[in-house]
Image (cartoon, rainbow, N blue to C red; front, side, top):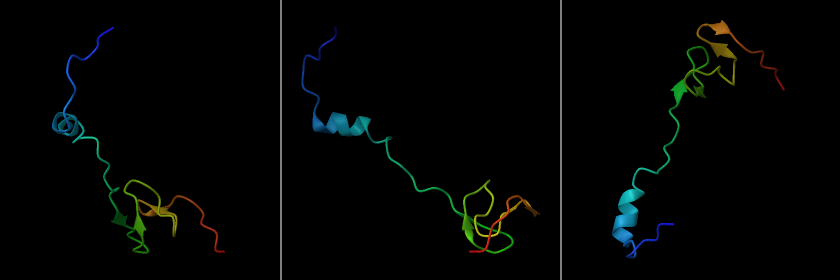
Length: 60
């Protein structure tokens, strides 16, 4: 089993971890109701997707 010979410095460790960050999801607006929604998803407010009613949204 491989065992490291030397301690990995904080700088070396942090340089390796630079690409492991999370990003906020992209937000677009609905063409019908102008609410915020995820791209390529049906609008949770009105149920519209690509100009048609994809899901039924019940008024509560």
